[in-house]
Length: 592
Ligand code: ZN
Image (tube, rainbow, N blue to C red; front, side):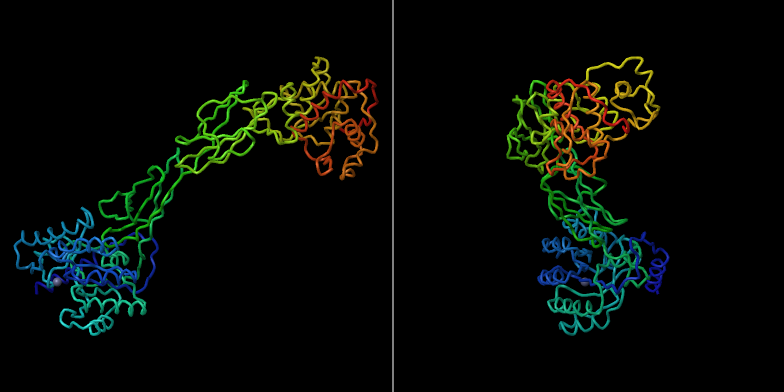
């Protein structure tokens, strides 16, 4: 009577206290079954473990402490292969015959032995020997108790086929099946039954996993014989995901797992247990390293497979190149711990280049390349610079570009300045305001107060850098604007417009450009040149100010770039003294 009451109470408690774990991906799920093995480990256990591993099946071992002490390496293997370790007393005594301290001793001695494999702080379910308990014993045990709903009596009939047939016949969704791994016939029966039941759609899980997946919380002191379907299956524990990003030359490791699962990890080996580090947030390590991690609802029986990820090197930032006016090269490390390498022969720097150990004096006309790297780093992308023939340093003007000598000379003569720190932006397009400003600076002339006051354009913003230049150019007839009030200082300047502006500038300076009629025809895209621009393009071509590109095109409506303006200014300065001083009429008073 007492026994029936306690079974009923257990049943009520299971239903009443069933706690639903927050769903990760709740589904109705398939058929689950938990194989359990009592009284081991023993001489047959390693063969059982081999068979389970081959099939990817996890089971629960209710072990006798004295045998755990005899086969510690088998218990370690069970745990590492994802099986659930559980307590079957120390010496298989009937616990109901023992004193309170005797019961506690049977449980705690075995738990301490299991801790050697699973780590301190692990929790173990208990199965009392002979299935004998009472409320006093259950209270003393202080853990969930697991019994069975399928008993093939394998200890009685030592025949693998018989036992297998009973297991297959009696298996049901949510079953806990009792077997003994101390019998060789039971090992054979278990492995054969697994193959058959898997074909029938059963999934083999540990006792703890079965209850968690169905949203049933196990209670201490309560006995469980099966886990009936609840309509919910949260599924197996997903493997954690290990990622790393480079941070100041080290690795910042991040590990993620499904909701509600804890993550345990190690940087030493893959033998994770309850005592392994608990992941609480990203942490920093040095490469090279390997990270092992496991996601678990309970490390003892309800966890993912252990995953590992190796990180050999981390990425790093390239260095910054500095060169003084005197040609002193220094490299600044942008990722701590990196080695820096450089070349001075125009080739891209790699880790095979010269190791940077301190400032280097450069000769004018040196192409610089540098990169960062070292044993713990992937080599960075190379960066480049030029210490020019005229003694200027550029990060973005290279000696192999067609415009290099012109830019260098334009900078050297002060016609053009860089934009920002050691950058020239040679490919940046020019606005009309910028081009006129370049010409104004080149001319060396000064706008007068009357010229400023007489400037008709209403779209010039007061105080802007181009105002003096535009008013000067208008007053001298170099530009007319789009109309009487509009100049468009922020519009990009087209190549054919640039020809006209330079042509008018030269006319105003009293220089005669050669006629050049018909010379525009040398450009493949001559028909695209606006009629008003043709005479300018032809004269600029005739005197060598304009050459066209290497495809033989002029691209009249392409935006003029800073490198082209630099080239025109330098050629202009060379030409100006050689051109005859014969004023000419403006070729076209319209436009511009
Ligand atoms: Zn037993």
